[in-house]
Length: 369
Image (cartoon, rainbow, N blue to C red; front, side, top):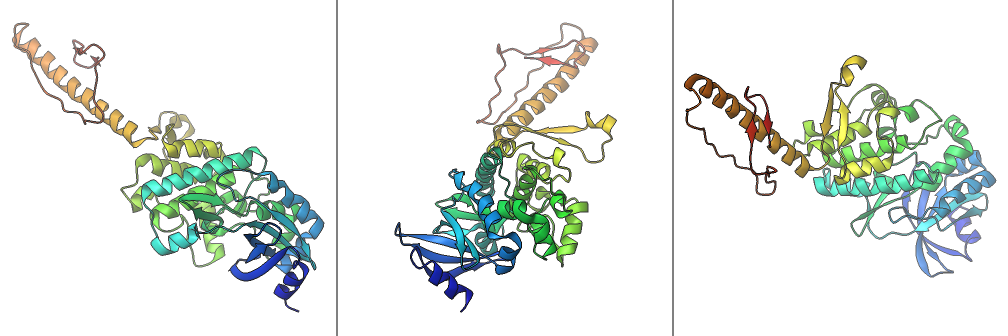
């Protein structure tokens, strides 16, 4: 009897298995009908090899932790169990497509949509992290798109595999994580990973949404992992100059090699992507003594950055004229005629002096308004 026949027979009173809709290294996905609730579901069957390594009791105990996760951007866990020695778990069946299917078709996504999706995923990760759950295998295949919203799937299997037998899984030849999206600490086998490993993975996913490929690629798994650990990827703007500076900076920070250099929480990542807070990046190559003076403060909103740039340019221009005025007055005397000039600002970022007056210091070096 085939695996599918065994599954159909043992679950016939609860689920009607209709067809296979996906397959991966750790599980095969079937479209099924939940007979009790008359609804379509996605039933994931762990590979027999993985099931043998984990064992049913430990796996089912660990995967139940994710049943209590309830968030608009997380795919919930409906059910889990053992059937004829096969381990499975059940999630809602989502009409739509995975982010992987979208990227395979379009390569690069519109910047605004990519940033919006990543911010929503970061919010979901933050929720899970605050409940003590780390995904460990975030990738485009595990992000489903439905009604223009992302749904993160497979928190259950990653948690169960990691907690129930991560070392034994590795020894069996299976791998938890996908090299292109795996954090450096996860790639080197560090088992004490925290939520910042998911932040790295999301940074890699956003990088691909914007540039059309992951930050690190290679001909073999070993080559990719070597680059993940040692190489710094090209910036997003180097490939796609139209991406705002603050988005590029956010991706760079998420992809830092050292976890302490990334966003402290997924919420911080989300807030930067939403434009609610600025981001500070250390300049590459700065020594510890120089680092404090070699940091770039990048505004998380393109409008904010435009306003600051406009005002900065205005102040510099006025200071220049101020120095010229001071020079003329020192040369021509106090009776020299005043210098008048016009400064144009963008219509959506007007410049408002506090009292409609500007004062220039005698030496022409400073301006107050």
